[in-house]
Length: 177
Image (cartoon, one colour):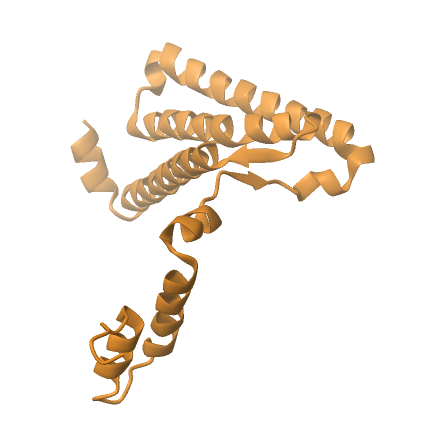
């Protein structure tokens, strides 16, 4: 064994033994040992995620139809209310002020936010296969966070607009005329 080349794990141990080991040393050593022992091809199949199983309302199978109808009704009322707000602000010329345009943008943001989340939940409630693919979950999370952030930003800007209108009415009147 005189001419045998030491493995990567052995070299790592020899290198780390020359100074006090940091906190990440033991987990890194265990991961390296796992990769050496199992091989890269086998580890890739262990760590690949293709779908997530949704458990939420599937624990109440006798109530799923009622939940579906309730959420569908709430979803339709939300979309109807937001469409009513958007169409009223868009059609009425006197409502084309910054406050109402913020409300119009807020209605669009809320409609898109509910359009991203609720249909997936409704299909999960009536289907027998309660899972979502990794890419669908990632894209739903991205759009949900994006529209949620837009919603929060619009509420912040609307609050600041109201603050300026109340605390500094002259500045507001001059900038809006």
